[in-house]
Image (spheres, rainbow, N blue to C red):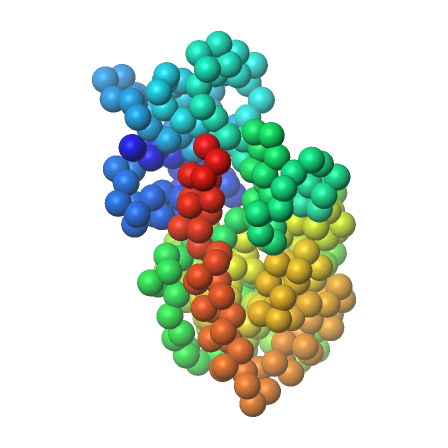
Length: 289
């Protein structure tokens, strides 16, 4: 079976980093793996016996091939669905986990992953492969890097980030922002950070969203800090939680100074390595598609 990532090319969209992680994981598992988007000329390509993974903003020109399978995240194109149903093509709807799933008729597979009907509700994961999750005791700097989206509005996180930024300033730690980095660049900045929390915005906090940043930051070698209660439920003792973003800074400092800091960090990294990579997510998908 071929793995086809039909989606956002790298750095073109926030979701491109999820597609990149799927691409790397399928390759690691030994699948013939290809990455296309709607602008690619795929005439003549043999799509038989393929597993497609896509997202609703980039699937307009995705070929629908009888005998192949489809994992569809937020896909609502009526013509596509008519063809899938008319030709009885196998598919799986993939939705990001939030606490809303608890209202639905879905079975719990594990913390943060549920299945019901034709829908898999799932948290994301770290973009590292298991053998890349290795403790590297990079010296910490007086900078806390935030790599990824910062924004205002209903789905924004700026208000929550401001609490942590105030704590950084009070403690003479510089808060810096970067975006569109490679995995290697991201990992390097997070590793050198004084602290690197995974802070969600108001809407995500209320909905019980679990950010992929928490899995990345732990796997890169940072203690897990978050204002997301849902994340605390998924990761348990492997993460430090407070709904107060200002307080997260002092809780993080306490953890850094604790005698068992390294022991707890290694345990958290191993937990992510064993349970929260895209190898894990692919294995779950393959059970249901």
